[in-house]
Length: 119
Image 1 (tube, helix red, strand yellow):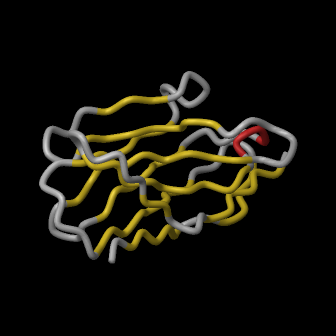
Image 2: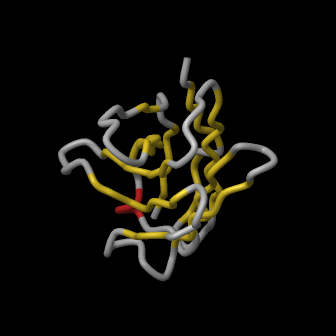
């Protein structure tokens, strides 16, 4: 059974940093992508960043470009999101998603980790 678990959330002041980690287990996909998304009360669900597991190609949402960096660790089966220069508008529940490559349209989500940026 595919399982994703986020960690690393917390409360930080404006301008601070946090590193979120998505631990992935229980799958047998050869090629897939890990994405980070966020949801804040009263705001649209938002794409944050994504990385392809094999090639390491990355993509970022416009609001986080230049501040957030996504990477992955093969040995630990984790994908991490380094968040720098955090702003109050970054406050949200951050969730990671595994999307298999190819014709498989499945999606697998973690439960999310809360990030709060105080002004």
